[in-house]
Every structure is written in structure tokens, then in C-alpha cells.
Image 1: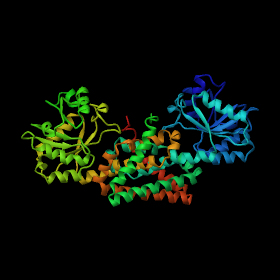
Image 2: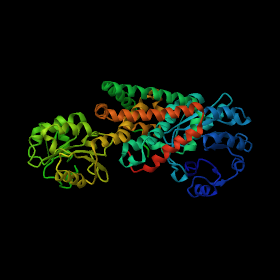
Image 3: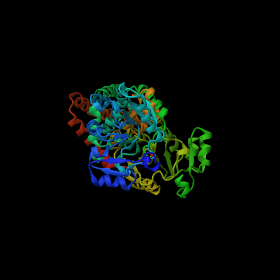
Image 4: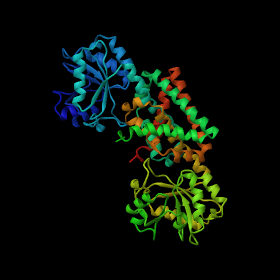
Length: 265
Length: 265
């Protein structure tokens, strides 16, 4: 949408499976034209961006890779990076692929919720490998910056470890919290419960895949969470409310350091 | 603020300890006049509302009770009810006290964040006892309704059990989640983390008291949470991602049933 609005690309082609949804993409100005054939969408492309669920990205990119322009580049916006980068490295398409992950989005999906200004001021992780040419990495950085984002290069594994704590564990915890609340009590929840559980509204199939691709780091994060949760239970059982206050303070200090930089709207 | 704006009370008197803060209350139209003497604030009052941290409510109400008008009534807005109602029942002031808990508020405190429309469409729990006169209960219901709220009568213990799941556990979980995130990763959090942890920004002393007053129910809720968290860890360790998807779906179904009724703004 931003590419078209600001004339940053000659032609933006949308690939997808559902013709009705694709038509909406054209109507809403998100793409110039659409196709349900992935190879057709990639013909002479300078840049291919895979925005599918993480476990479908590699297959789609490999399929598209034969049709690119001579200096064509491919990236993705998947929430995990290690397994995708490793799989791409094992294919001939690996040297023209650089993984990306824009830290932007919401619990709402679909082109009707698209926002051309979504990336302004947001961070995009890039996970280049030794296979990638410097000029390709720079070109991709320039692409994200043209949409208003900042970029940061990081190893795929560091990326996945960070995300396990800042995104994947919070998602699982939100789902746990929601599933613990009986339907009969839903009239009595307020802003606190609603904020804490909001991301649990995300697509279970998308998130299943993210958690599967990042299984080890997520498990580690969950075990750390279980340890903290156990410390809380011990403090409550002992009636040690000085300790409870300390646990609350530690959380507040970290939450206050972030403040209202990010809002759900 | 609403009482004054809509002329619903002859005189609104603010009691507090900090003269500067009290002055702001007058300036912002939240009260007609202020005092730092609790007994003075209650002289001939038709209604006294204690809005202090939960462990200070009983002491303040007992102090104020001797000065009320003949049919004077007292209530509070504390987030817990059982210990407050029990303590008030043991005092002579018990028969003119009916506990309240408006399900409204935010992570922001202070009169500068006051909103005269805060209670519109919100639910206020009332926890009357056999000691209370029907006309007093009705009068208090009418008071909250005049501010735009709905009321629901409930036993103090049922109230506290509900709140342990819909409010107190989410608060503790938000604090756990925040405290698990190293400062070095705070540049990489997004809307998901921020929503999930927002309420952790609340006052640790206020929340320590809430958790202490509702210790048993909160402990029970935390143990249920630990059980669900354990099921997640087991599913991830077993690599059973059909089960992970099912856990995600259960959370999503419950979250979707609430939708966007409540926003953090």
C-alpha cells in the first residue's frame, strides 16, 4: 500500500490463493495486479516478499526463485528465522535470500486492516548469512527504510531467542490466561484482562507454526516463566508479601521502561 | 467529577493527606471542597466513599462513621471485598456499610486522569449482608446507576473468587511476564508484549494489598495457571503441535467471546 501510494515500486504484484481476497487487495490499493500462480507473480521480479505462515515460506520462495530478474532478491516477513534461513541455505535460491522480520502488526489480519504507515519508526530485523552479497543486504535495508522503518542485522538464532521472550512466550501466556477464564465469568472482565489476553485472538494455525519453528527457545522461555510463577506461589503460600511487593516492583520497573511506546491501536 | 458536573450531589467533599493533590482536585472540578481531617470530611455526610488502598479502607470508614448524617451510608471501591466486609461487620458501623467494587479504571492514577464518564456502561458489584437495610442497598444501587453504571449484588467471597481470575491473576501474570524480559531486549518488544504486560505498571503497594486480602483465591488461580502452563510445556516437549494448536484455539475462543468491548484507552 505504501509502495504504491509513494510510487516506490514500478509494479506491485499480489500472489494468493483466494481470488475474492485478491480482488479486495486491488480495490484497496495494496497491489497493482494479482495472480493465483506463484511462478507468474515472480516473473522478472526485483524483490519477492513472502508473507505466508512461517512453515509455507520456504516452499513458496523456492517455487518463485526460478523466475526472478537477474539481480532479483527474495525475503520474507516470518516471525521466526533460524529454520527458514537454514532451509533456504540448503537450496540454490539461498544466495539471493535475506530473511526479514518487521516488528509491526496487530491481532487483526486481512487487507482491510492494512495500514500504509505501519512500518514508520518500527524495527525490521535482517538475518543475512555469509552467502549473501553485501549489495543485496544493503538493497534490502534500503527497501525497508524507504517504508519508514529502521533495520538491524542479527543472527537467525539470536533473533529467535529474543522473539521467544518478547513475542512468542507472551502469546502463549495470553492464551493460557484466556483459557483459564470460564465463559460464565466473561461479563466480569475489564481492561486488565482484555489487555493481557488480547493477542490470544491471533490465528492458532499461524501461531502453532511459529511455536513449532522456535520450539527450543520457546520451551526455554516457558521454563523460565514457570520458575518465576513458582516463586510467586511460594511467596503467597508463605504469606511473604514483602517478597510479593518486590516481585511486583521488578515487573513494574521493566514495564515502565517501555511505557506507552506501543499501543494496540 | 460526574456528581458535580451533573449536579447529582449537594456537596462533594474530598478527604486526603496531601494538600497539593487536594488542591488539584478542586481545580479540576472533582470536589467542591477538601480537608485533610477525615472526621471533618464526614460531618453530616449522606454517603461516604472510601477510595483508599484496600488495607486502609476499614480504618478510614470506622473513623468517619461517627460523624455521618442520621441515615448516612458508607461504601468503598476496593478491589477485594471479603476481608473488608467481615471487618466492617465486626464494628458498630457495619450496618450502615455496603461494599462496592466498580469494574472500571486503568493503569493510570491520580485526579489528572479522572474521567467523569468512566462508569458509563460499567458494572459495579455490591456486596450487601443480612445486616444491611433494603432501603440502604437500594439507595446505593441508585447512586451508582446515577453515574451510568449497572449494579450486581454478589456475596463477598464470590466476588473475590471471580476477581482472582479476571483481575488479580492477570496482574500477577503481567508482572511475571515483564520481569522475565531483560532490559537489553526492551527495544525489541512490540504491541503484543506491551498489551500483555500493561497492567504490570500499576502501583506495587496497592497490588500487594489486593493480593494479600485475596490470598487464598489468588493462590488457587495461580495453581490452575501453573497446571495449564505445565500442559503447554509437556506438549512442546513432546513435539505435539496438534495439542499446541488446540491450546491456542481454546484461548482464542474465549478471547474472541469478549472481543473489543474493553480497550486500554
